[in-house]
Image 1: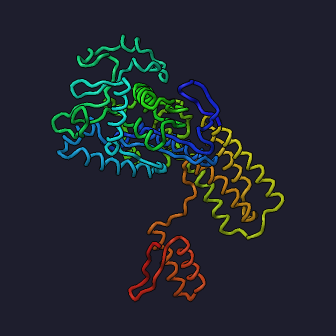
Image 2: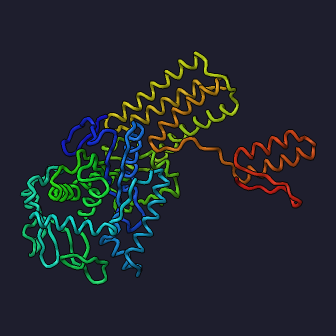
Length: 465
């Protein structure tokens, strides 16, 4: 399995620090509103990476944080006249709803920044003791130039960065490029006690501390959107490696930007969409399918046309599985024939193509193509003449590959209320005509679909099981 390492800027063979185990940290959202579709891309991409690693037999410890104290959260709280914790608690719950809709597995741990303040104070103290940080009037800064490898991830040069700065250096900073580790409180802001001031941590320190606590000093994969490469991930490396004296992460993975109708997503352009807004028009499985239709390192363009194409593509797969389910309902119990065994061997070729695509830096676009080839094969080579063993194996291959992609394609057929009422009416007519066999068939048919009938004096009452 090869993945592209942003640090080396090339594909590398994946070899975890500990055999059979993967320690993976993915930067999560700042929870001050509903997540937008730009947030959704790394969530979907790295959930898929995790799923494939697990399919390959790795034990994955997957950590993704929620930033629950931040200027934007505080501003939102002040606008609504509530506490910052009320805002973050509300939107963490809403974020989890959207993640469930996109079939994103809960992380092994979802740490909250506000619950990890003692660890942040401890790491900042270590950095001060080692000479990498200093305090001025209650604010603690990181001495960027003291960390000699600063810029190794983003390939940025400190002198060039300083020359490009347009804002004046803060008087209390030793160097314009130093960044904040701890800042004093402002009026009305939440704060914590520290050796330097009543205040709160800077943004960058939280991920260094949470990664260390839940995964250790060294991890296998650190991931997020490419907008985090600089300064967030660059600063994380400086903090973690200065404090721990070890390489922070062996591999760095970043997904490319998402554009809307070929333009950068922004509120000012009126092309800013939340996942919740998208869910009003599309099943969020369609959004997931769309996100996986391109390689994660390629820019992705969101449009109504492409979402419709994704909906149609996903329906092709769902319909194929539904067709196999119908055939299974009528199939006999005999074992697969020699001819069927040959066909199943042929079908495994599409599974191999899927794995080859995923082993090549998680190329989901080619992996989806392999699924479509398998679906086409199933549509051609599955009929009422086939054995149950063969049909189950064919369906199992499709469902397994889609599960790796986080796509739910084995949908039990849901009856609408009107359909149920129509079948009940047909059953009543059958009973009047003394066609009890048909009446019993309808009862069993509804029961198989999770509908329980009860005959009462007032008539037939139905409930969902």
